[in-house]
Image 1: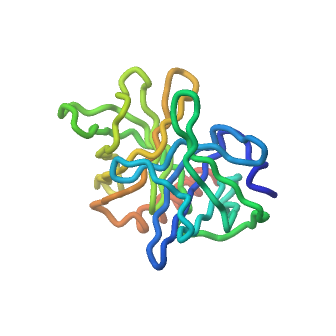
Image 2 (image 1 turned 60 degrees about the vertical axis):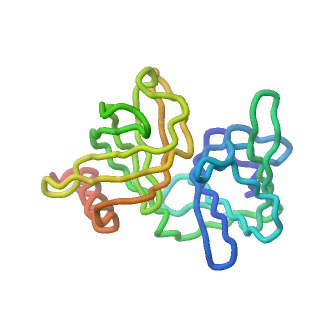
Length: 214
């Protein structure tokens, strides 16, 4: 499978590596044009990233269903100017391969939580936490209550045995869905909890529900 065969709406993780340093951004495929995937710009510390430098190694991981994502290595990307805003255009000549990427494994959460928006009042928005990985989290929020231009959030939701999961996240995509709701995807910046232990606990809990063992 080629990168340009991804469907619009597919969730992807874009991994950037410069030497030994790496950073991952969660995005959504907005368009596919002549084999090139179009997403929103990658934002880091309030700036759009220019990925055209030759020393940046770019890989794309696509969540195609199941636990193992499709990896596209050796990608190239650049900012392009559209009619009204800029986009990130990503191309790759290599075939995608299934990889076991445990650090990016996402677990369904389905818990009610609360979000504080950066630079806003202390009031919290009610949300539903959709899924979680060691690097990112996504939640569903009422479109009417969400404020455009929010870069950072503080998310809190129930953990294990009465504990609370507390996460600071950087917003990487906001996707409209049905019923006047938004899915907000965030890269995790800080967390006061052991996410690895929580994800394992939640996975076991979900498996019990599927098998009918409450």
